[in-house]
Length: 116
Image (cartoon, rainbow, N blue to C red; front, side, top):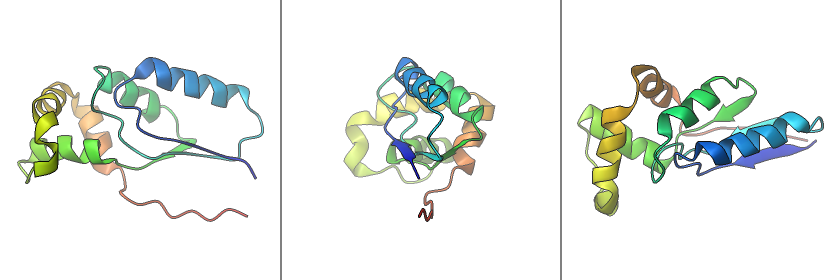
C-alpha cells in the first residue's frame, strides 16, 4: 500500500497544484492525507481551500494556523504564541469566503487510519 501525506500548504496554491498534479499522474497511491495548515503565510487561502474542497479523495485535518483563524472568527481565545501572526490571521479571517470558512469549521482535528 502506498500512502501520500502532505501538510503546511499555508496559502500557496501553486505548490498545492503541483502536489495534486503529481497525485493525478500516480496510479499507485492508495490513500492521501493532508495534515492541515491550509491557511497562513501565503495569500491564496481561498484558492487552496477551493482546490481541496473539490477532492473527496484527500482526507484533510485542521492545522494550528487553521485553528487560529477560526478562533478569531468565533471570538475564541487566540493563542499567545501566535501573536506575531495575528494581523495576518485576521486578514485571512476577514477574507475567507463563507463556504471556505464552513469547510475549515468541519475539518476534524484528528484522523485515525490503519493501513496494512
